[in-house]
Image (cartoon, rainbow, N blue to C red; front, side):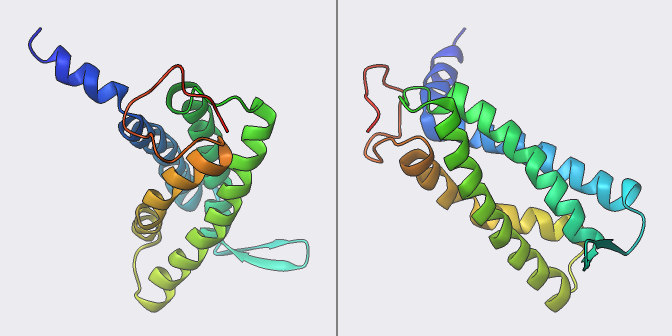
Amino acid sequence: MANSKPTHKLLKNQVFRFVISAGAGFLVDISAFYLFYHNLLVQHTYQIFSFTVRNSTLSLAISFCMGVIVNFLITRYLVFTESKLSAYKQFIRFASVACIGFFANLAVIKILIQNFGIYPPVARIGAALSLFFASFFIHKAFSFSLSLRHHGTHKNNQPGN
């Protein structure tokens, strides 16, 4: 196979694998968001405790959690495999970063929907893409406690910090 060498090299690239991982989590997220927004949460607003929450906000909260779980599992087992941190510690860190990312996504979505009149599922895609690149470096350095100097290829002998 003539194309197997470039494909193999691409699959060894940590950034590429992170794109695949984030892409899978994103597909779960945006698909769930669409289903919740259009099919499962049919009211415009919901009362949760004493708060009124929009359909788009509740859809985002549920779909985002689903995407984070998928993204974490793929990232842990296929991207940052050389991390020496326990899975529990990795997940707590990953979820903490994701929580901050959730509020950043929420702010961007709110601006896109309310200020620019963008259709909520499209706003969700725009928000996620706008925050993607920072997440690679944050997850590598913080969630998985790895050096930022080596992100091109997977090195089995590279210790975690």
